[in-house]
Image 1 (tube, rainbow, N blue to C red):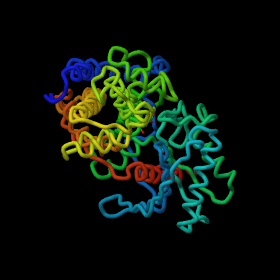
Image 2: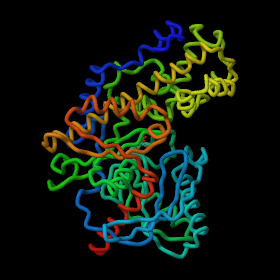
Image 3: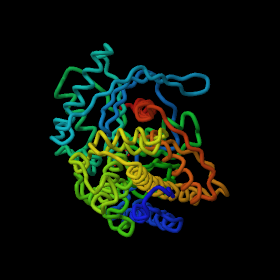
Image 4: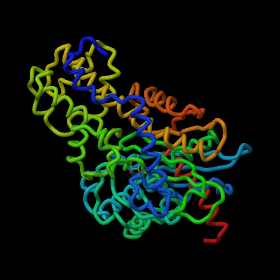
Length: 458
Ligand code: BGC
């Protein structure tokens, strides 16, 4: 521990530490919820919903051609054109061009119609730009929220997460909402063939590089994972053969009380101030939407205890959301004698001493290290389950990962990997990151779904 940090500060941050026994407990609890989520009679009450995705282990080849991919789930909405083709090695694909649209606050929290009209408007704009308005393209939709699927192109939104709140969407078929919005415009046509979660899209896009990739994980604004489960354990879907990808929606772990002995006062304040109190409690301890705010609350507490900034907080620091999650990465990565840290604190109207800088860095480390460890316990739970399912001595597996916290934080990855490996002695794990996985994965699975639909004659 940093000897330049006041012992009282260290003392205060102690409660963020998780010991190996804690992680073991967390892992076992998350596994118990996963089990409950898979069973028909306990699914309803389980916090981890284990949603079947209708993405199966035995793709029957795929169609070639142009596919449009949409990606909705963070602060931006993306549209891209992906050319899927075949060469001697199997698949290849070329992403033509993507365009990013920021989602205005009122579209996120207004009505579902407003949100989907905005999405349709963005697609229209993109097609104009690409000169492709006349073509009826097959479309893959990455929609990064909990969806209860009935098929790969049909599913209802269970609840919004991550600051989305558009009314009239929960409980409705998401693909239907998109199709209706496209119809309302009437200036282009689309054939929506698949809707997938971002974890699933990430897994699929990584699968094309590494056929051992049977797990997808996101640690970005939100946090979630999917993996290939034995069909015989997926009680919500008929059939026993092969495997199906299950979207765990583990972000909701804790929503039925399983995290109460781990949650701190800061976690409770973050939750109470959110758009979905009482929901996504595990995600709120890990995801980028909340990490900066957790640090801010810790700093406020330090000020109140007269342990930082001369006991005086600026108005800015007192403002919710002012401490951005990217500051956590920048401060922990600061190798310039706290120059960058001081600058960040200045933007919050805080004059800092050397002691303050050390304290702020330790606050960031405490919050992000706990996040990495908690998330590691979750993934270890998934991997140990797969190991048991498959009965091999050692499970050789690849995990495809995406998300800003995982990719941009200077130490999250290493700390996370270390926790996972400590808890999975019988797994041989390779981690790969995906580039543009959300879009590419949606296009690739659409190519598979399209082929199936053509074969069945839809
Ligand atoms: C959503 C998941 C998503 C994750 C990462 C969570 O809030 O519920 O569906 O995969 O964020 O984007």
